[in-house]
Amino acid sequence: MPEFFTNQDWEPLVELLREEVQEYGQLHNLLSAQQEHIIERKAEAVLAGNDDIDRQVETLSGIRRRREAAVAGLAGRAGLPGDTPLSEVTSRFPEYVRPLLEALGSECNEMIRRTRHKARQNHLLLSRTLHLTQEALRALKPELFSQTYASSGKVALGGPLPPRYHAVG
Image (cartoon, rainbow, N blue to C red; front, top):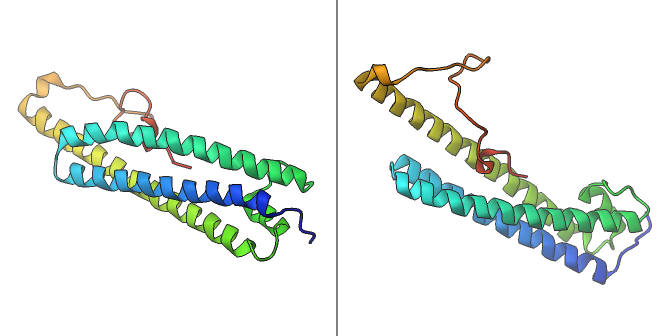
């Protein structure tokens, strides 16, 4: 397969991938701290951390868009469709840089997986905490509560989930 790219092409991509891995690591750390606060029942700390998590998700979205645009541009220059994944575009780079690009791509995917897992754990912990709190309040003051159920049979919660609980990535 012919090589299309030079150092000037791959160095910015490497920097974007490194930045993305680093920012996913930061998000994972924020989610880990949030989990500790949930377990320790520190409601104010959980709420304060939510703003940091939301900002980090926005930062990551911007970095991801820049990286995807860079990959799409490189794919186009190589005569590939703009939606060609990084793993396929990598084959158009010089042999000596491919392992670095593959390693960074793999690390980024692993951080996405770990971050999604941590976000799901936190969501479940918060959901369970909310349910237990509602049950305790319902036992104390049953006249104040009326439950509605979703079509799935689960207790319906009003409104969409905040972005921090959407799948990151």
